[in-house]
Image (cartoon, rainbow, N blue to C red; front, side, top):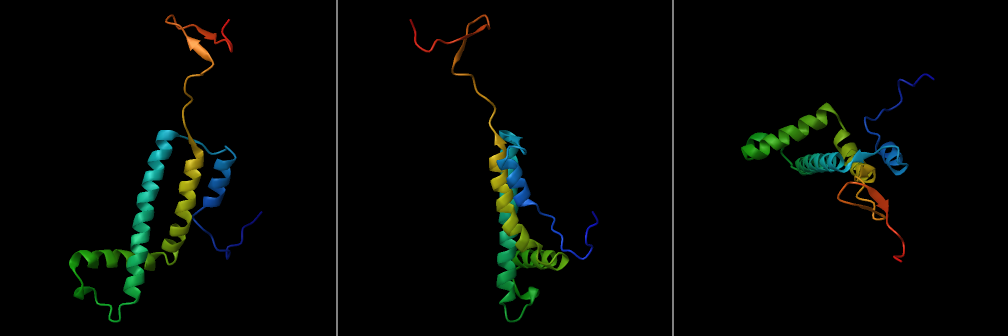
Length: 134
């Protein structure tokens, strides 16, 4: 089936990832999921910071980078450049990344613990624990 070259495309697939995680078709071990969640949350924080900078910068009557402190000027330049390079992608990322985090939380698989219905004796043999002791 050919794709429409004029159709808008998105580099994000948060809803698909979330659906797969809810169905149990996308899973990650807990450690990898936790690491991915932490990295996504840091990235989301950076995206939101850039969006705040763009909103503030958009309301400045005379936009002159040389009139603001150097450390802030670098942040403004980074945010404006990112927005010019990929217009609208920061906003899209800010709405999609929380869906990715939710999907990863659903996909997070905790390794199974010991079976509470069995016991292991010192020799390593497992035997089924009786429901009601005699």
